[in-house]
Amino acid sequence: MPTALPTRLLATALLLAAAGPALAATAYVSNEKDNTLSVIDLERMEVTGTLEVGMRPRGLALSHDNKLLYICASDSDRVQVLDLASGKIVKELPSGADPEQFALHPNNKWLYISNEDDALVTVVDVDSEEVLAQIDVGVEPEGMAVSPDGKWAVNTSETTNMLHWIDTTTHQLVDNTLIDQRPRHVEFSKDGSQLWASAEIGGTVTVVDVASRQVLKKLNFQIKGIHPDKVQPVGIRLTSDGKYAFVALGPANHVAVVDAKTYEVLDYLLVGRRVWHMAFSPDERLLLTTNGVSGDVSVIDVEKLKVSKSIKVGRYPWGVVVKP
Amino acid sequence: MSTPESAFGAASRLGPGAYWECLRGIVVREWLRFVQQRSRFLSALVRPLLWLLVFAAGFRAALGIAIIEPYDTYITYETYIVPGLACMILLFNGMQGSLSMVYDREMGSMRVLLTSPLPRGFLLCGKLLATALISLLQVYAFLAIAWFYGVQPPVAGLLAALPALLLVALLLSALGLLLSNGIRQLENFAGVMNFVIFPLFFLSSALYPLWKMREASEWLYWICALNPFSHAVELVRFALYERLNGLALAVCLGLTLVFAVLAVLSFNPQHAALRRAA
Image (cartoon, helix red, strand yellow):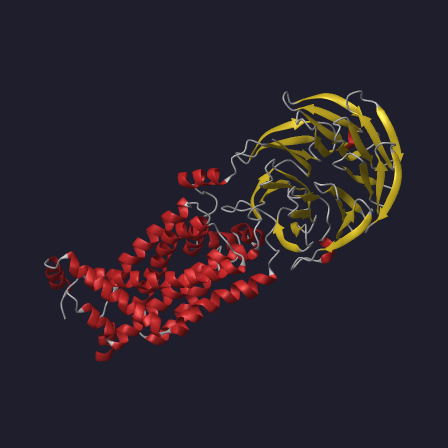
């Protein structure tokens, strides 16, 4: 079989190594079915280690000093805190039941956690390990984001189809925005003026003006040769220069590239199966996607808007963060 | 007409300049023929383009389910079949080259070429090389169109593919020449097209990866895996992505040598004359 015994040219190997951006960043990927995190060296573009964590790890977030990694261990009903220097779990935070996604306040202290089974958002102080507040939101809360100025925490509820606006000074729910069916993820623009929210069943992404909390634009996606039912937007990432938005389209196996100014869909990039969440490298030259069903992470070259590589990780990769 | 011995004797007295002049003559003649037959150029392009733009479009999402070497990530079906279609151009041209060889022999122009004092092996290899070079132009024209259609291998890969494509072109031309030696007249050639081109192309990794073939049936997989054309396609596929498939290279090099030697040894310009005499 000609493909079975490929011999690589030394020159080719060197070329490939040189083609990868020279950055010493590390990506952490949560493998939902393996109860592990895969560690990817982004310079070598390969998995360099696997860390055992709690049951069903999903959402991941880095502390603002990049020293700690917060892990939603959903079936262990807690948020674990991993010290990245030692690779050890140093703390377990009371998260409420079934934590799925969370967001860290710019003060680096308050963690806003969505509790999928209890229709709650739990606010935990990561230093004192105290629960500061529990806020009632819609049914099946999932997506979570805190505005760059720290004023708003926004949660999405998958069954109520709403964005819930929580005032972080009072920890009160102050407003709701109805969007399309099954909102999964929310993301603030770098300047905090816009909020992008994906609707998995609705197949749309809604852009909301943060000041007025009114819908600015609704984006639709159509991929040649793929049934519209399979287009299920989940993860969203916005470049900090305000140029692009990337939307992971779930079982459509593509990531949509959107012009963040004109809201025009520029391209669809083929990645692995059932793509959900994404993370940029620190210089934003690479975007990593977690492909749950195919069990790998695809690497998108943001400058060229091309998928350059897919790296095998554990079973059902879910969340991803990149540490500089 | 000179016998091989006397031709060799004469050739040994000729300098490298004579060889060069002769080779240039053969290549220029092939080039002129190519330029004058625009329809041949177009048909050589239309065939793979139909496969790419029509056939592959329907299977666009069919392959995005596994990563296979030499690709680093998921690819569309269009991307998969481009190396196979490039080799398809070489396959048709190699066979067409031998068709023109039969024609030349029938019409006697081959006999004019063979009156050259240079060794017959050199003349035939020159002819193979000329056919191969013309084929490469067509392949790169096809790759350029595919590029604009969105199938974009790395630029360095397009360069790395040049020697691979040349070797495959020589392999298939040598095979064509060998076959043409067994053909007594022009009319028989249609049969060869059906019994050689189609099995070589369809029973290879040009249209489907071998693991897909294996899902269908084990024996089909083995036929495809042993088909020399599969090795030709894989050599080009790997080269386009800046990798070397050592096994495919060995198979292609070995078979090119074997076919070329057999073709030169079995070449008999008397075929047409004998038939006429009979």
